Length: 255
Image 1 (cartoon, rainbow, N blue to C red):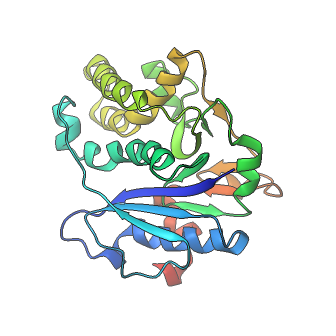
Image 2 (cartoon, rainbow, N blue to C red):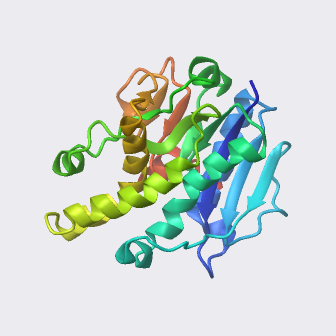
């Protein structure tokens, strides 16, 4: 199998790259990856900054992109910055499969840590007819918007078998649908949280509608948030700790 790791993030105008949390997290994430796998290609998609002069080691490819507002998205979702932070993730994940002729990608947010070789994940979950992810853990919000068990898209394996660009069209439809449906029955904090998770719920819904529901990683192999603090980590391969826990899980020399 021809596999790769894909990251994608935006650096807002005026920010100094070395102080941007996503960049600091990325350095640590790639360093932990290279402890277990020196060879797998890594594609780092970044908008708003030039990283080409920064050293990430061999086989790390920097791909600059521009965030494009192609119209038709909810106005407040765009104005509050969610288009800027979310839309590119699935565009670059799907695009990487086709552009680099890959069998599978493991897409990651930057706030991730490796505890073993990602090829273990590809061997178990790669080259299938399914999207593999983690269930979302926003239980209260999911119950209010009738999404269950949803998905968290800070880590997923996408194969060429299901890397369909129709996902992106459904994403726009669904983001409009779910935000307009629930705007008046959620408080402001809940509504903004829904804005944040709307694209991952859109992808979850796409596969539900195609009678091919998202499947989930073994909970002992891929963990979210602070799960490694209270779960057995003997089989742990990947940990998505969430940015709010950066200082808990990223060594100080990276920050």
